Image (cartoon, rainbow, N blue to C red; front, side, top):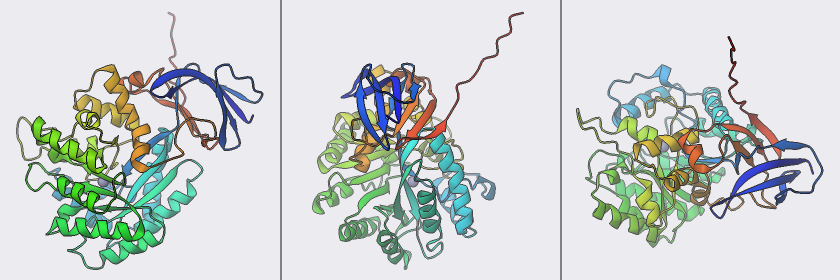
Length: 410
Ligand SMILES: [Zn+2]
């Protein structure tokens, strides 16, 4: 064997099992307790080993631009305005350099699969797309990056945008996104996106229902379109902060609707906490939609980073475990099983949302392995456990040494 990982704990059908994992080439060759195999060994020391973390929703093209923007209101409108202004100065090299900084942070925190949104419109043209395509190629040794092209500044209101989205899909983007609330008629944008997705057999991943009241929600319309176009299981929506303002009965109705239509939900806790509640000067709503009742209704949910160091989210280190912990803290998640489900939303459920068929620790799967400094998923989320090392397709991709305490005896 090329590598044998000893004394790992992995999740198998939701249960923790202690195993050794043997890797040959790029693939997991054997998994068993006390495996009889020869080769270089690495001790996991009873720690949790995961098949890599999954970022289903991030924006590499507009990351790390805080130094070019002014933040005063902290509103969605300001974030869009400031980012659009900064965007005018973007070049391929600039997008590449900033995207690289955030991508390397993500890799160093154990992320091995990613769907990144890329803005296309006549202003930016293909600059963002070219840079992110290059990043995806240059970092393929550490992470699988999938592109989602989308019209951040509007589709039907911004002539020329649709042609660019189509160009992006022709060049290989697997997913098309949307921001319906930026067009005069949000439903017209939703209709166009579903039509384009059908033509290109693309996945759909929309920014949806990001607002501070329950007026004008489009989520049920998206469910209807998903059914009409027969795209159940291939549609995801991010944010849906408006749902967090609904009483349980109405929330439950929509949860059932989402589950039946096959529409997944991505929770973006850091962005939503930053952008929501700005119209309140006390009793500020959190604006983060709760995953537990959605999951109970059968909705696939993921937790993701969305933005790092820009006007949409002036924070970030690319850590998905931190994001899972933040979500748990904000949404009052405290029972051990529910904390464990927060880890699932950055691993197994995230893979389901992205339809990654080859994800998981099993014989024949890619040797994507990340060791977390915890013995179980609940502790991993509760203690913000650090990833210690990772292998992507059998090759070591990062190491994060544990803290060393220098004890004085006098
Ligand atoms: Zn986003």
